[in-house]
Image 1 (cartoon, protein in one colour):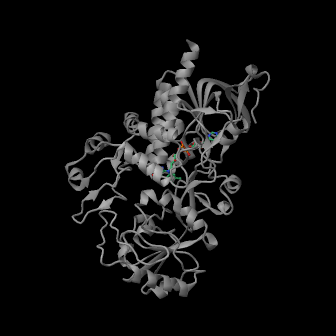
Image 2 (cartoon, rainbow, N blue to C red):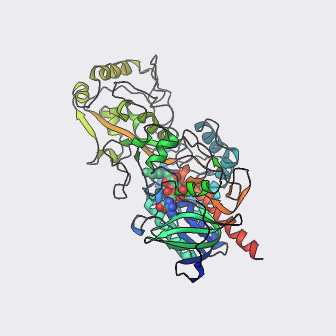
Amino acid sequence: MTTAPATGESEQDNVEQTDVLVVGAGMAGLCAAIAACHAGASVIVLEKAPKAERGGNTRFSNGAIRAVYHGVEDIDALVGGLSASERERSEFGSYSREQYYDDLARVTQYRSHPDMADMLVENSRETLFWLQQQGMRFLPLYEWQFKLPDGRIRFSGGSALEVYGAGEGASEALFRAAERSGARVLYQTKALSLIDEAGRITGVIARKDGADIVIRAQRVVLACGGFEANVEWRTRYIGPSWDLAKVRGSRFNTGDGLRIALDRGAMPFGNWSGCHSASWDLNAPDVNELEFGAVFKRDDYLEGIVVNADGERFFDEGADIRALTYAKLGRAILAQPGQVAWQIFDKHGAARLHGEYRVKQSARYRADTIGALVAQLEGMKREACLATVKSFNAAVRTDIPYDPGKKDGRCTQALAIPKSNWALAIAEPPFEAYAVTCGITFTFGGLRVDADCCVLDEGGQRIKGLLAAGEMVGGLFYFNYPGGSGLMSAAVFGRIAGRSAAEAVLADAS
Ligand SMILES: Cc1cc2nc3c(=O)[nH]c(=O)nc-3n(C[C@H](O)[C@H](O)[C@H](O)COP(=O)(O)OP(=O)(O)OC[C@H]3O[C@@H](n4cnc5c(N)ncnc54)[C@H](O)[C@@H]3O)c2cc1C
């Protein structure tokens, strides 16, 4: 609830004062903090997590980042000099504004709001260079690209770079830059409500060490993530069974900022029943922990088939490249009986799996015959599963060459659910299966912001003094998402929010 400041606050020790207050210390919050400092404002950042767990989903992320780039020159500049062998083995291509718009529009079923899409796409390249200036380092992202017969890699466009050190690296670089810029971070400090004085947001009430504190600010930037770690909100907004999804990232993203803003009359915007959710190991804990990092990621479904407990396939594993399909797969798995599915590979598919499939936590099964493999899968309708494998194998168009160097069109024929590319029979022993479930990454529903990231109220008017960025911004992603856009949008919107907050403070002062 919007709250007035505690009476007699000026006599209290627990009152802080700043130009710009940022709530949340992930990519969006820290970019906002850095940009606001650079524009000449004093900045305090509130982080709900203790210092050891700081950094939100940003820190859990894999660090893939999607931006417009103009070819090898951009990649060279962004990684700080490609080696001769990197140049030799890579076809980087380019990723135009038009391609980014196309990918975003297509995977969101043309629902991404043009204003939001514009802000993301048009600022992506420049923001990447800005992140580099802040000390973030990048590497070519060799995973998930097309593999040519001569061993070279053809970049499939979009996410051509990853942050050095993945989420940990991104988070470290951002905290260092924020502190260097003069921002002060208050850990284990949870924003509870906004201070609203005569229709203007003038700060936040927060809880620190069990006591409420007042932080007065001329502008407040909310950047405290979505509601993915809030089991009740997930069920309320995304729907039945979403209480059963496993959380892939931070346990601190429980929708606090959204609640605080909605209580003040902010306009809800975007796909509140939608989220990013991926295939996740069945053995993963209900909520991820930093020590596990990415070990539960199960994104190699392109290399085999995926079946449910009825023994049936339920989606097209080869519909498109991984970056454009993986973020809707969690939802598809959650809709299956028992919220479980199995990825099944033969020897050749298994040989192409990423390292995380081999970790000791993996819900992994192995056998020399497909019958013996399927017999191990608890709850599986075995005969149906064996029939599915058989009919899948028979349906593979062997007349079309398999080619991991492109979308090869090697599909199945006459199956109710096709595999549209990279279809190979599950034929050669040994066989492997991996039990997977739905892992939720982040929620798509958020707030309506304008071009300065100012939060709009239900009447479409700015809520004076209030801005938002990152996962809290609605209207960008619907149903699905192009991989690498989470970090990019957090950086783009965070930077805009921080800069416009600081400029507004300075304008007020002049
Ligand atoms: C496992 C995983 C892998 C991912 N991989 C990628 C990837 O490779 N590429 C990509 O683009 N995206 C990826 N993402 C998505 C990406 O991490 C997010 O979209 C992005 O980091 C969001 O940034 P943010 O700043 O909005 O939120 P966050 O980074 O989650 O930051 C939110 C912050 O708010 C704090 N907070 C919450 N409530 C409060 C409160 N009441 N008071 C104070 N602070 C509060 C949290 O503690 C946290 O510090 C991945 C996510 C996960 C979970």
